[in-house]
Image (cartoon, rainbow, N blue to C red; front, side, top):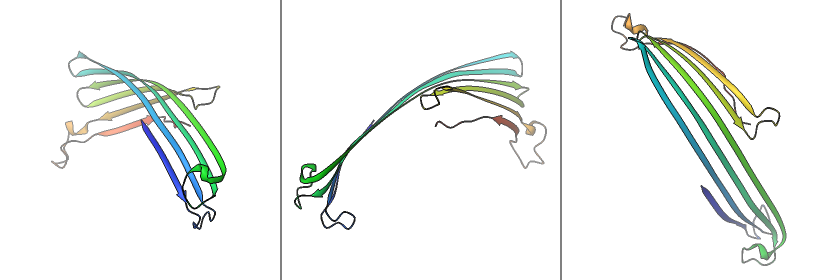
Length: 171
């Protein structure tokens, strides 16, 4: 939670506003974020370990701005909105909600070969009305080659990985 109340003033001698300006603003921003994950592991045989991770995220971001700009100071002081001849209000509110679910399966073979598959589904209130949810798949394959060679003692741990994944950006 963030709350920012501010008063910005420019006196009559200001080069940007020679008649003076007073800005009064109240900015409020808060975010609620909830995460839940569960991990399951199982060894079907020796050196064949499986892991499944399931989870979700709920997020809500609320932003509110109440701003009034007063121009043309009547007197040099006090710096208050009632001491201006022209007042322009500006109110803005934004609420963005997100809902995401994901699953990841990882299979380990002989403590050297790793296969991972991931699927994520995101939904945001900022996505278009006709398509509020999107799928994002990913997969990777890794081989721990230092089980066979350390390249003459040059490496203690080495892994080759190939991966594919789709990502997105919240609009």
